[in-house]
Image (cartoon, rainbow over all chains, first blue to last red; front, side, top):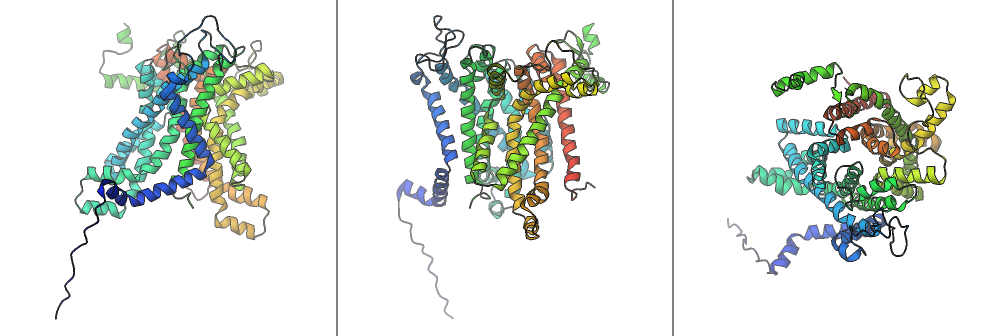
Length: 308
Length: 287
């Protein structure tokens, strides 16, 4: 019996260059991204949030070009001036221009927010992924440690760590990163537990992929969307908390153009010079609102359960 | 002498045993920032103030947060829903220390409706201490005037403190309302011809409250955090202000005592929530 000879020659894929290859390989991802972007532009609140974030990032990068005065340029002839055309937001007790100081404040607060969240993600998601992937005793241990961290209200834990480390903005960042990572460990661990059971993990295992490869190449990328949503909102929270810590006297040194610190100095002058505390506080509110609006919008988009 | 008194020459595990032993006897050491009196005394003096503030804030949170959550849940994607959504996002974004200052500016300075801060006017004698909560104590002693003043002093800080958890609670009530409203038993209730009011309040709400209860327990921790900031702004003599004073003056015994107290309160709150489950959801019966 003559067996049919199968034609095994595969047509060579047409050469498209590096970019073409990449486009083809990531076709589904690009479509997904386009779809997500379309959804994003349909949600006005998320766009408002994005615009606020972009404005503040712009201010952070180009503060010296935008701000009319230097943050530490004190003018003894114009102390405690109410808002006017010369000083849009008025001046403080040393005659510093509050408008400029608020703009320069973005250079301190935004990096703090980003640094805290990024370090929390790096620590938290690695620990969470390992814990969820291996399970067993490691999981038990990690979860009890996060329990301990989560049983402290985070501001209080950050306060205590700051107290032990001493007063500076770097220590505030460290303290907050220490208090923040368990939330991510929990989040990623929960995801990892369900992802672990998927067929593609089994497939990767049967192909002989190492545990490390599976965790970093298969597990973590699939946890990405809840992490991104959480992180976006957390940047706002981190900025809020850092400002709160500065307000009660940790973090920024007195006189530094940091929003929480400025509110704290303005507190004494609230009765007669309301503008000193009001505008820096408004800046904190706006930044946090921007990140929260954007994160909220992202959640609607990235969470398949809420999609239609 | 000091070294011997504090067992500083002993190995650290042994020191730890001494520490635990002291805690069991409510001996938390001496507070440097309070002129050397026992930390336990200081905590006992300041804690009722914080408790009063936090409970008031919690009541406000639930009283306002749950209704607006329900409203936005049953009017999904309508104008009410959007307003509540923006409101709750503002709530989580607002720096409460700043919000407190703004409230003071508006309600004390401009309108003159509410007092600036503190628990009672300076000239007023606190009611005889029974629970340490001025509102309860003044009622027990029958001092109406004091009660009114205590409530007036409580309104602004409590509202300020409740604002951020208000957002969280209303948000969660909304989403669990949405989930409950799409369940079969709600359709059954409607099919039976019950009024919309009965459907929402008796059938959907009862089920929607379960996740809200959990969150309320967790929000209590947030309120304790927030109390530190609120107390600073409103000159409220509670443990929050005590702890910031202690931290800035490196008074470690007080810091340890304060942290311990907060964690204990937090854990107890979560236990209470777990026990409430049994009442709210009879399906949950712990074996």
